[in-house]
Length: 257
Image 1 (tube, one colour):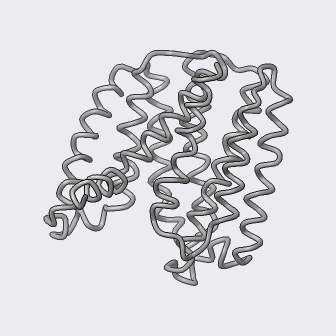
Image 2 (spheres, one colour):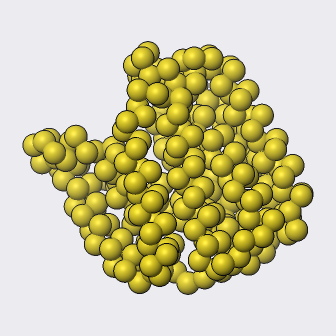
């Protein structure tokens, strides 16, 4: 059992799980809007997400001798292989798409500079993932239509909501100077803010040309995760269960499409 726990921890800590979640968001856009393109871009997103997240989480560790610890050495190895995987699929993409991916990468580099403005970082993360999972897929297919703008707003809203449990959990260890949402407005008000964002996420779905009732279970799931969030929750609550929402969403899309 200890072996499987370590394997599971490595799966989460190496950002494989979050990379799968982001790729699921790409495919949700594809299937729900009939864009459906090949696997090259989603593969690029998968490896790029792992590189980006691991860079942000472990940069200081990778630049010191601490990476020689078995756990961090494994993560470093996976990150290096992810770099090669990213470059391989990146070179198969059109130049215009490559430029957009570079833009998203530059936005990721801004993240460390927003640490002192803790309440801003969640909005930056939501914007980047929205850009990667909605804007670029539409750009690839040259399909800019009314539903495109609604998808952009919807995705941003639900991503901000899904980041609320992370903000609440991290508030017990974040420095007071960061002024994250829970620190500025309190946990109850932060929860209310996240839950209120789910309402327009659901309503906007029924303004779209091709609407789907699947936003209802996803919205309910998100509200429940926010409601039951607390500083006492263990790391798996956010890093596995909350990050599994896009995976559940894609499964529902595949079942009911």
